[in-house]
Amino acid sequence: YIPKIKANARVIKNIDPYNESEYTEALKQAVAHARGSSLPDGSGNVFLFAHSAVNFYERKDYNVYFYLLGELDYGDNIYVSYNSELFKYTVLESKIVAPEEVSYLGSYMEEDTLTLMTCWPAGVDLKRIVVTAVRDK
Image (cartoon, rainbow, N blue to C red):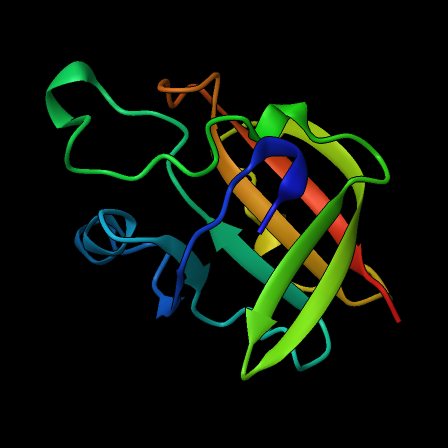
């Protein structure tokens, strides 16, 4: 749940971010958790991705939970519920990157992090917006 942008979504875990047919099906129902990234109750980086928008003809087929991801600022809160436990994350930064930039899939900070990614600008896949948040202790 992201209070600032009123995004509240189910997450499907262990989705292959490199398998288009697999993630396309997952994104019709929920936000996707990238296979190989951490889970909220572990250490490392939890990587979640979703659509920001889709074309007119597909608009009823997909959920666009991350449409307003670009509105998040330093200090905003993100909550993830996992195994009956609530994890709170605080946004550290937001940046626009090239679609080929995949370093965010792995652990890249000493702290436990949550990374959210979607296409940028909304509905276009020219770039990606990546929001990094640190898990509160």
